[in-house]
Figure 1: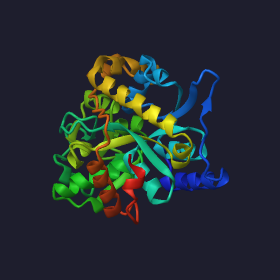
Figure 2: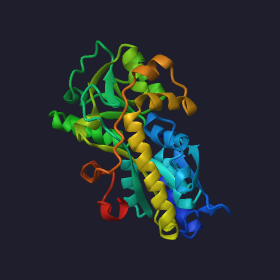
Figure 3: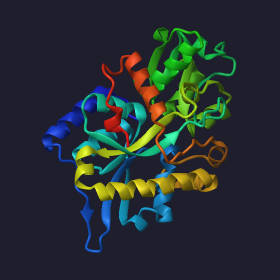
Figure 4: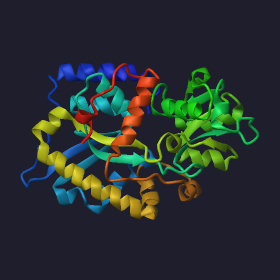
Length: 319
């Protein structure tokens, strides 16, 4: 995830759209009919299914030669897809909603990752020190809360659970820190609480921190946290390639959902995680279909929190 303003990334993407004439990236097809694709991903557990799908040959069987390239977050991947650096990319849902509301020509082609829907057993949560007086989501009001990116999916879902618990989220002071730095900031008292996702959630609780609320599960039990997308220009030029990518992703998501041990093992291919943490971390859900109702929830929250000034056209953005 980026440690900078999402608005700057949107401006970059808009410039990229103008600079390349809004054409998007073309798919390179070899003489044997194989199409080479670059996909922008984030080195977190969320994208384990696409790594498994490449290993299992799901993309190869569709005639796709996929190269996975890592970036810091969706805010970096969005302009990469628009400019044609990537043909497809992964991003959290709120980043896609922000981009779409600014007129960026994006199209979701596959579900990505979802909440487990269970408090205490989700892959993302707000943590505090064991002896913290913060006991409920309402207690986060007026506190310093660390998030990886300001004005994005984590702030708006925390606002939601605090509001639902009777607290005033407008009094929260959000502090932007990278996920690897949040548990340490909580331990040192630099912040009162922090929102973390796996594997950092298991690392934090392993160090004695306590979960206060699972902000994704508390927002919507089927919350679609992240999705795979392309540009509308690429889709218009390469509809069959996009259809094959979607089919391979569906197989990959289904495979990951039923092969948890292989998910944990494939993390070694693109992350560095302590074996004990890897064994104990909570895995998210990987549905093969986009939960449109939960995307609408995030869109409504983005509007309520002032992240966007108008609702994006979900009919255009979603499959």
